[in-house]
Image: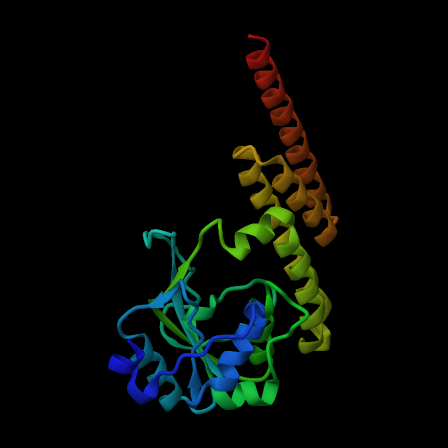
Length: 269
């Protein structure tokens, strides 16, 4: 396929060993040759018009460091499930973007294109992070450059439980990594709002973890539910987070007891 379609524009490279996705991202950056860089994961894709529209944004706005579009969530069968929220009503440079991206991950990697010289000036993806290295990079860029937004959903991001993301969610590693990212990103933020934005981010992800815990509890996965509840409390100890955590713990314990009794009765019968 590379020989027939890619010709001299596409190359293939295989790592000599499994180096993890963060190192793979860096290898892509090092091997790329263009002035605009788009990292496209193996299980994601883009729709027709993605490259034309985002390239035009860079041509017409020389000051921007990155441009991204809305993205569509799809499952392992490529069925569309959801769409990212609308950041603004019209395509253009985003206002107050740093404050928005600093408190919540709002971009999926296949939806964003970055100028090559931006990566060269700001450095590589942070190897201390294993799940949120992309979010940290988008905040780093937003702290230094304007960002363009395309309202049309032109990128497709795949979600499936067998991915590394699904595994890290069960163990609670995803929230641990989020806390590390918030700590790292705090130094990019203006002094007058760094504490406020960091606390908001942690509270947002505390409730994100509790929502995950609820879904795991409903599916009977007590192990994953308790891991997410624990990490939520590490993120934020506000009364609302504690109250929701206690309610979920009671729900998980009652459900576990119910399942135990059901299995016991089946054995006895």
